[in-house]
Each structure stands twice: as structure tokens, then as C-alpha cells.
Image (cartoon, rainbow, N blue to C red; front, side):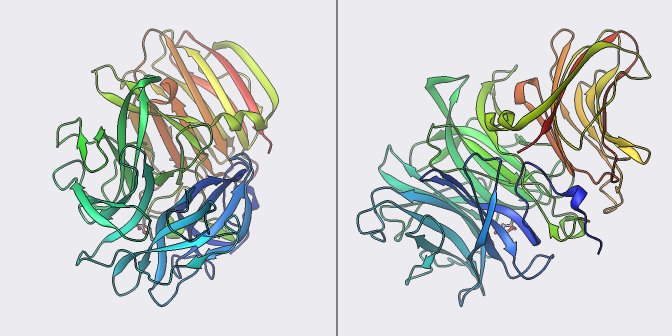
Length: 473
Ligand code: FRU
């Protein structure tokens, strides 16, 4: 196929070549953020599953390193996580801190294995007694996420086990004991459960009031079709997760089509809870038209919990502050928006902030990647009370039958003011509204040179303050 450098993202990780899917082993250690991910080192389709590896000083500039983990006699290397073993509980590090990766060995059955690195993640040694959690007779048994639970002074591991999450505990990362299960009766079961995560967050920024958030990806059954990620809020006592919500309640972290298998970073030094996801969808991941790579990550996002209008807790996502550090070439315009639109800017890797006053308009928003062949429209539909991304005319939209679509999520607007933050990066659009309570992530494949950016309104009386920055790492 023809190479597609114009679709290579500016501020997120994509491999130089070949296939990637889920982020794995996200961890900060000795001044570096590590990003591992599912990878086929030998082709641009899923297969030969290995862990690719990249490092970054700032979550924005990623340097790809050699493949970290490759298949062995126990099978392929599926998704998993990594931790800093600060006190050498594992005994791998002669009393020093070191990195331990926990992953699924996918051979005749799915089992959990570990590997360790004594050289800041550059090389890895697989543990001699793998698997550390043999398959207990469950077909889908994968994607271990480990964290240190201070309250009980032990490691906790979550694993996706078909239609539920299993929780294990360990003193040393090698010997694991099953503690509890969650989920057979909760949430969406439109597909198999995958890639769990669990972390504690302050509520409304108050460190004295915290809740736990359980993350579960499912495929298929997502709100935009195919794969997507749901969350539960509740309590975790070190052994058991209890959900705040009713069993039927289903909440999605992102109702765009392309944010899957997100994982949070371990050991972030300033205590922020940060994550990123794979910007693709199992519905059409194998048909993504980029070349010579296929697959990329979202921009990293900071997570928080806020009390919603109904009193329930909402997961809030905002682009990490580091992204503002690579803004360049600020351009701004403010004025009334007639149906014909306002001033146009150009850019194919941009951070856009648009503050609208609605007036009598029925919709307001921003067109990005616009040119003769189409555009991607991001906006607020006042009648429906929804934030949307419309990629029906976004360039190469015939990736698959379901690709050309409009994706939406409820957006609460009080009064007249609507603020949108749009990260449009070559072949991806991420939109954050209502301070990060409403988020949509979509892949798009604009024609080369389709780089116009403008605000629009449908109906009269809208006003905009538009700011556009290039993303220039
Ligand atoms: C999720 C997933 C995981 C699995 C990995 C295999 O996208 O299916 O459950 O570990 O991909 O590549």
C-alpha cells in the first residue's frame, strides 16, 4: 500500500511500523514514562503478540525502543501491566527497586506470567516459574492489572475472567491468592470483559473524600458499535469491590468509536491518575488505512471524579497539562457566527479551544480537517442536548460499513455558554466538553491538505471565541 505520512500523529504514540493494539505496562520509573503495547513485530495485522516499548520524559514525545517481550513456549504475550517493586518484595532486585511486568501468556490456555527488568526496562527476564497464575478452567482469563494496596500492605491484581473480574492478592508478585469476584450481575455484558483497572480518586477534588473506580473494557457491545469501555464507582476494601450503582446501570468512559482498553499509569510521581487508550475499534481495526503502521494511542488524560447533577459520581477526563507545553503559533478570533461561518485557520495537528454563546442557535461547533473532499464536524446539538462528532464526510470514511457515522454523548449546558476543547491530530479527533465530563474519541482519515479549521453555528445569534494552537512537540 501507499505510505500515509500525513496520517501519522504528532503528539501520541504510534509505532514506526506494523500493528499495535492495547496499551500495556504503563509505568513511571526513574524519570521516564514507559508505554508498552500489544504489537505484531512482523506484520500489520494482529498476530505474534509481543510488547512494543516506548519511553517519554513528558507523555508527549515518545521514543520507540526495541520490542520488550516476545512469544515463548507458554504462548503469545497478551495485555498486562507493570509496577515498580520499590522494596524488592519479589526478590528479583537484590534489595533495590526494579520493574516487574505482569502479562497473559496465551498458548493452549490463558495464564498469567511475570518478567522483570534491572536496567530501567531496556531488557526483560521472564520468571523461571511462569505461569504465576495457571489457568483455572476459564477460557477468557487475561489482562492482569496490578497495583500496591497500602491499606492491606499487599499487591492486588485484577483479571478479566469472561463475564466478570477476579481480584487476587500477593505479598511478592509471585504467589497469588483469589480474593473475590465482581460483575457477573453488573454492567454491560454485550461482549466479553477485558482489560480491567481499579484506582482511588478524590471526589470533587477533596482528598478527604475518595471513591474507587473500576474500569472494564468490553468487545463487542459498545455504544458506538464494537468495542468500548465501561466504569463503575464504589468502594474497595483491599479484598472486595462494591458498586455504588444499581446492577443494571451502564456507564461508558467515552462514547466515540475509538477509545479502547485504556490503562492508568502506575507510580506517577505527583499522584495524578493518568491514562491512555488504544484509538481504534475491533470492528474495523484490521482495515485502518494507515501505512506502514496500523494503530496508535490516545493522548494521555488526567482523571478525576465529580458529583453529577443527579448526585451520582462521574468520571472526568482532561488532556494532561503537558500537552499545553507543546502549543505553538497561537491564533485567535472572536465574533458573531453567521450561517456562513467565521474566520478560517489552518493546521492538521492542533489544539482548539472554542467558547460559544448559543443565542438562538440550534447547534454550534468546530469543523476540522476541512477541504474540498469533506470535513469532520464536532459540536453541540442544543435540541438533543448532545455533544457529537460527525465523521460521515471526513475524507476516507469507507473504512468499513459502520465507520461513516455520527457519535454522540449527553452534554449538560447551563445557560448559554458551551466550551469545547478539540485535539485534532492528523487522523484522530478527541473532544472534551463540560470540563471533561463529556468525551468523544474518533479516528478520521482526511484527504491530504484538508487542514481548514473554523467555527460554525446553525441558527442565529451565536458568538464564538476561537483559539487555535499548533501541536509542535
Ligand atoms: C483487548 C484484547 C485483550 C488481549 C489483547 C490481545 O483488546 O483482546 O483482551 O489481551 O487484546 O491482543
